[in-house]
Length: 115
Length: 113
Image 1 (cartoon, rainbow over the protein chains, first blue to last red):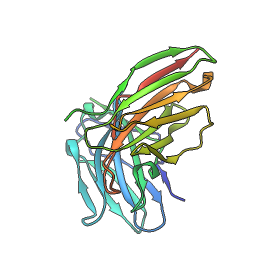
Image 2: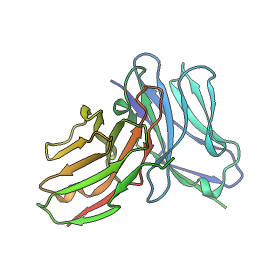
Image 3: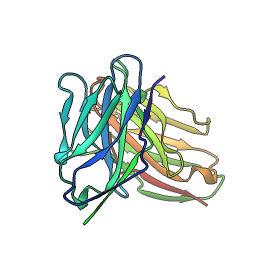
């Protein structure tokens, strides 16, 4: 079985400050990890993924995430938050050699960036 | 490249009716997955189709069904609608290799009254 936990339902940061959205996972073997963002009344948009290689992954809109195998975490980060980053963020995990339908999504974290 | 499209975007139905939602994946994507999103339950996986075959299924009752056509377009059907079926239904397409991410459509907002 596999699972994803996003321990914070809500994260609030001030514009210009660094932001972190947390994700921990449980899966047998090596994980494939993904971050998606959802703006109001929209579908999810892919931000970045970790498949293999460098533990620090860079993605769209200045976001990055660090894969930490010992802590089974894949936290999403951005050095300087923008008000336009306010949205709902989802972390997802999948085992290698499985297809998209085998992805498990977290419950989501609402990020609010205040001016 | 055009993104994933879903029709209709909004739908209002009455309890007991049935509904059909449509999804057109990104060109070249043969995997199509459907999800139900509600405030209380988050993102729940319904089913995944690949090459007209259902290859994964979530824990939903048999009232929820789907199919995929030879051009990879997919439909999902919900029969005998219940109030609890009110949700945003998302479709996602993907290339068929495990390393690839999913691309989501804007969703169909279904309201059951």
